[in-house]
Amino acid sequence: MDSLFDSAAEEATPQPLAVRMRPRTLDEVIGQRHLLGPGTPLRRLVESEAPMSLFLWGPPGTGKTTLAYVVSNVTKRRFVEVSAVSAGVKDVRAAIDNARRELGMSGRQTVLFVDEVHRFNKAQQDALLPAVENRWVTFIGATTENPFFSVISPLLSRSLLLTLESLSEDDIRAVLERAVSDPRGLGGRATLAPQALEHLVRLAGGDARRSLTYLEAAALLADDITIEVVEKAVDKAAVRYDRQGDQHYDVISAFIKSMRGSDADAALHYLARMIEAGEDPRFIARRIVIFASEDVGMADPTCLQTAVAAAQAVQLIGLPEGQINLAHAVIHCAMAPKSNAVVKAIGAAVGDVRRGLIGQVPGHLRDAHYPGAAKLGHGDGYKYPHDFDHGVVRQEYAPEQVRDRRYYEPTRHGAEAPVADRWAKIRDFLRGS
Image 1 (cartoon, rainbow, N blue to C red):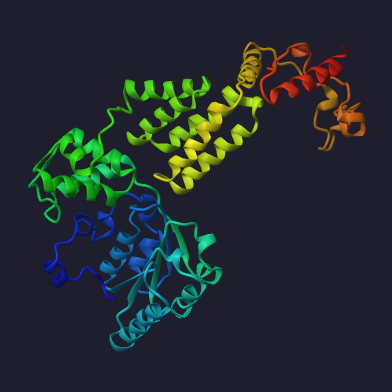
Image 2 (image 1 turned 180 degrees about the vertical axis):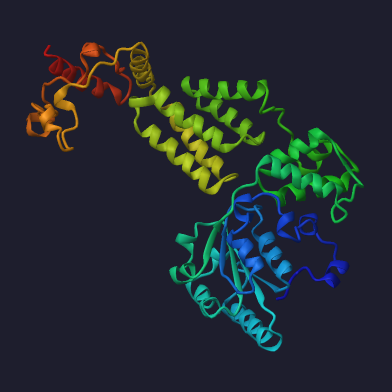
């Protein structure tokens, strides 16, 4: 299957706005600056005559197909696209055979682009190996899944792996503004109100293709694209939410206080408002991680594990699926027993240090591993806790200035209750009570 960007086909069937606005050169590509600088693999591929094999890994709408097409267009190579959703081994081999034939007859190289390559099974991926190893084609595989789990090792080891990032709001804004004015896009025939532009940016969620699809739908309804037109076209009401203004701070405040108050329903409402308004899910995840230690702490130590796992999941898969991980963590945080003993403990300790209560580290606790430390008396008299019953031994640990300070005062909420009992016994024993 040759390139879908054939001029005759373009005249016969009007192409979607997202296709028409595909960059033709690397300089036209918006976003992915870390991949497009001088000396990067993509630049070398464009500037070199030698075939190269690449995997492009990133969320939807970040430009994987675009980059493959740009490579083909700039280097004047044939562009052959195979979709892993519908193609089989027979299709892969046919594409490779055609590429070899073209290379032998005309010397023209082929870019073989496999979209969603992670959907290929082992046999289908094996069929690509000869072409990659013998450089019959410039192979570019696009995937939204971690290729270390979804691509066979022989194929991955013969290819460069490039990671694409979600487009920033500024990137999406630039994509939309270009589409409105560019002759290939709306050609200035429509105007885009500032509020409508910002709503489209929020709806895109870092996906350029989605932003252009929504813009095209709105342009079919009216030449003067207002926020109301966008809402009607996309069937998604704009959440009145200014991430630089009061709404941002009010909603995140209500979100935290709802979790602190153990109202999971209210917390989920504010989570949904932030997500629908286009709030950065990583910002939400960071607030949940902080909450897990600040407001739950040792009352449920597993809450922090859930929060961190949700933050990692959001980073890995993005939205919309990432909202499920965020909701999981929000419910856990809201329903967990609460304790602010951890944040109070570190706050008190930091406060003492800032007031100058520092003192010398006791000699028996100092590092005794370096040459000459023994002559200074470092480590003398240190008692190794594992050599004593229960793994606890009485000796001085804190500097003299803070010897009697009490920082961690556990509550008796949830899992912190047995911790409180144990800490009371240990503290009394260490202090000689």
